[in-house]
Amino acid sequence: MKIDIQQCGAVGDGRTLCTAQIQRAIDLCEKGGTVYIPRGSFVTGALFLKSHTTLYLEEGAYLLGSARLEDYPVKGYPYEGLDQLCYASLLNTDGAPHEDIAISGKGVIDANGAALFAQQMRDPAVKRGRAACIRNTRNLKIKGVTFRQSPAWCLHLVYCEQVEIEDVQIHTKYDESGEAYGIYNCDGIDVDSCQDVVIRGCLISSQDDGIAVKSGRDEEGRRAGIPSRHILIENCTFPSGFGVAMGSEMSGGVEDVRVQNCVFQNAFSIASIKAIRGRGGYIRNIRYEDCRLTNHNPEYQDTRYFRGAIYVDGFYGEETFDADAAVPVDEGTPLVEDICFQNLTIETTAGNAIYLCGLPEQHFRNIRMENIMAHGKYGMKVKNIDGLEQKNVSVTCSQGPVLSPGAS
Image (cartoon, rainbow, N blue to C red):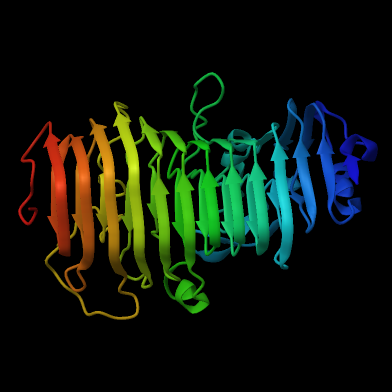
């Protein structure tokens, strides 16, 4: 069964609000059916997908988010690791379990974030929406479509299993003319307490993390205890942003993640492991391999949030800290172990080439680096790491010593 949204009264003139008509098409679609979006620009507020259906966007089809705040109802969503009040996203699933949902085609899903960002920032008690927030879904497939200008994180997956994202483009930083949208904290894809995920062949031009793997925050995340695991990210291109991150919301655990055969162009980093005091949980069995980064973008700088092309950071977000001042180990102390960086080429004019800093009360352990050629503004800094193994690692820098005390 295929339902063309025009059959339900949707008008693709780029002006007429079509939320009710498109939602009606979704609601009427039978099990195994397709909701078809033809060529044209269809303006809509929040839409809610359902199980056993495909949302298909024809080439030349635009699903354009309404610029009106009232078209996005306030609901409870997980965001930044906590259950919070948020504006609904352009595409959503509700909190009930779902299965067999697909979003496909060569069309564009434009969340109109430049128009919504300032409006959604006015009330600090309500967090921004996303281009798509897909929750509690088993067997999710997203293929071929383009996502643009989300008000916050672009594609947010929460409590999902058996996910395939392939040949998707995400643009959260620039419009077609190369002008920045002016939206911050705008990740490309956030994998949040999900299992069995494949992200393949995607182009992700992000203002923030290209892909971030997360699993809840602090006590709330530890209580839920739902890890992100069994994740493969391969053959992706990152023309901007901050690479592929683990954490910093990782209280439910992150494990068994592989990032391979990816290209980072004018992005600040390939890899970041962010695990700070208070989170608890663990990050382990992570591999970055066969990737290259070339960054000549002068706007990126070494900051408390981004310290290097490869960085493993126990003090993420802290402007000043004492890496020798231990505190008692408790349930909020994160564990980081078994991290592998292999076959990486890095050339960057910003930040450290390699930055590894664990916690003094619980060192990060078993970090393996093999076949790495890295050049940065600064060289390699190492602190509070046990079991650092290096084989065929070459580090050069533009400023300062190549190796910090403790590196070898």
